Image (tube, rainbow, N blue to C red; front, side, top):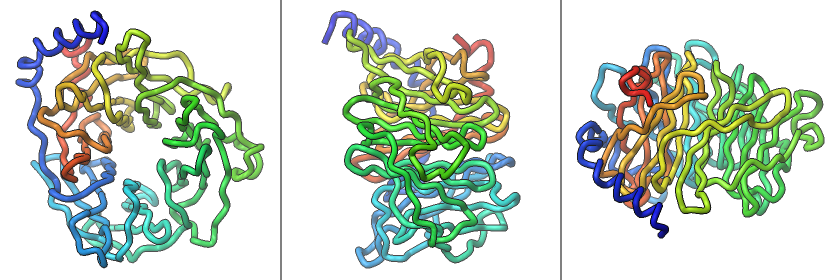
Length: 370
């Protein structure tokens, strides 16, 4: 460890008691689950779904769900699907307004299934298959368009599907050759964007908007970005944003945010996000009013930390949200229209699902801004 790195850690540890005093203890959502997903609706209710892990083997990993209203202190998950399937640690995708006034959850079961609710999560439809495959990254775009990405050796199989589609659709596109380990997808308007990381670093590809979306010749890229240590995408009124962490030559950790440029099909200039500690798991979301929050796990002090931004150009100093956190496998952020929401995660060791509130509006108040 370098002298500079050691000094940074010592300084951070000195400030630990004050930071911890401002943090809230996390709320235990479930004692047995993995691969959590979240979306917050226009009323501020957080919709949380994950895969249960404590059921008999013949029941597989049931799809669990709970609704956490803005005024409530917690939610109680209930099983939606007990079908003997094991989703291979794939987080469910949740849409809060596709079609308008409905909820939809997409889960990787034997097929890619979607279930819907027209009464804000009280009752749910039977699962409807809309395709096949297992994905390691996924997002929901305009009109219920789905962008799903699946790892295959050193490249990514891209699936374009629809919440209103059918299992008869089996088309795929092989993208990002040489960058095929981890992947996330997002939408720049109606254009699907794929970011993935392999041995040679992280790269972006994006559809041209013309021709067959499952023909690689209709895509731009892959364009190399960096060699990251965790990354995520989120779209909204401020456009499509990428956040990622890197390790510098002096062993420091830095987090950057970059906006996707639809004209160049590349990400624009870097914007530094405060945070220099070892990082594991980045989660990003953007509210319908354009406020953004990025949250991550600080694996030196076992805590969840976050930063917020109004535009993506300037970010608040890091704020500790929760302490005493075990190593998470996934960190997810869900924001309502006013920037209030939740950060949720699943503990990698004991399969507990936990969450803590986050308030971008409060973080962006002048006294909290760097």
